[in-house]
Image (cartoon, rainbow, N blue to C red):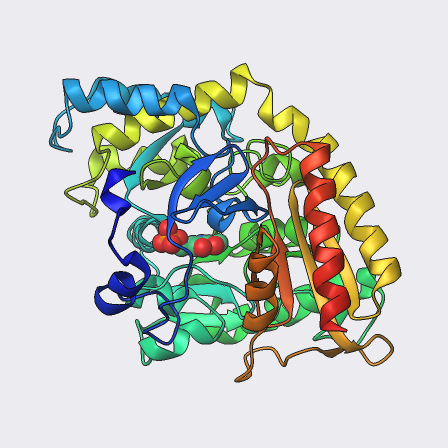
Length: 439
Ligand SMILES: Cc1ncc(COP(=O)(O)O)c(C=O)c1O
């Protein structure tokens, strides 16, 4: 902590660091220097309850000693092993991920440095395997920022990439609270959404579509849990047309929904899973593509067309192995049911009290609070993809000791999976104050 003495880090940061997705030059950001469990600490000694697990990533909480030790040990033994060679930790982690995936232990993993890159590589693999070119993604989706993943993204963070990569076709997926299909009946919503998608498939040519990439629970685009039957319907549609179904589990993977992957939570088996964030509990950057064996073995006879300097980096591998061991040893996925019940109770009580909450929705430890100006009309408190944000609201919460991120009118509640009831109660009390002020 000595390095902090006398240095105006907030100003230095504003002067030299380009901060994602925002106007630059903000010298009022807290200077985060330490984390422990569900708490972040800044250079002035303030602490913040982390109600979004960083960016839906730090599933094991901050400062986990077993992870720090595993990373330290690996750092002194080996920090780089060429991806073209084998590596002990890489083999161990790939095996452990395949054991968690929904393919009865049969599959293989390609490692990347993050989620966006994983999505790009998954698409490249799907195009290579199928010999087809087009890819389907949902409008209300985020799949990464760089031009490839940014084009796969449906929402407005895609726009700066345009015209983007060719061949990406988008569709509307169910959103019961704001149905694009003009119904408040989830069953009708699913039927209409699947019919709409099939129309698109027919018009695009089913035999020209390599993959359908979808977040099994929509994350930063509003935490939307698809109604029963939709993911199953996607599986059936993909089977009919020979399209590979890819689940983007960058947010939902590694326990967020109470199972290893949302695939198991919803009982739908995709052909490939992309992951990042929780695989190392965000201790070292890591992402990847897990493929079921029937697809992975295609590359026994055809060279894999993907590669990165940092693919399977030993430090990330060591962090991943230690994280997966901690998930299992500490029964983390199993404890999510209790976290879900507590979040449902506390956030539900806030919804009863505050008229600006239109809906609380979610599953596992993954909830969205949708803020509205009018509960009857459901008019959003700030328009989705409009010029306004709720930045002042989240900044106010931060002053009160709560870190939570939001996008337009939806607050994303996704705490570390180790959060206690007492911490959830404390976070809810701060939200209560903040919402009272907002009104
Ligand atoms: C669902 C989803 N996919 C992909 C990404 C991109 O991952 P990364 O930022 O590691 O490239 C994100 C990031 O938040 C995400 O939420």
